[in-house]
Image (cartoon, rainbow, N blue to C red; front, side):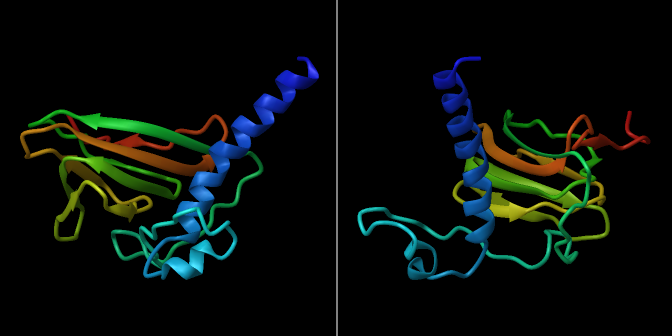
Length: 159
């Protein structure tokens, strides 16, 4: 790999890692001043979410692994479809770009989420995302997990 290619890869990785960090840092009830202070005045930063617990009420715990990996995925759920019951063994953070999602969780009341909302997903709690609307649900999910390890595990009892 040439030096310029290496630099492009570095900046691509850096950009990939900055968004989850900014999302994580902006989790919750932040004023714009709290997150804008490190940027030039022309940059607009909109706080999305600040949380100390997951959607299931669990305290947030940072993962420990010898092979850390951050993954970002775009998920599209068509109208009438659902993800199927599953769990995440690693902390995941989601941002709903569009649509409306019903998030069912084992032992909890369902959550209603819509475009423009962010959430900290539950860890090792079975859950199911349903699109009961008329347009696709599109979301971006960031995972702080481990290299070569699954970040979504299907319910073994699911058909």
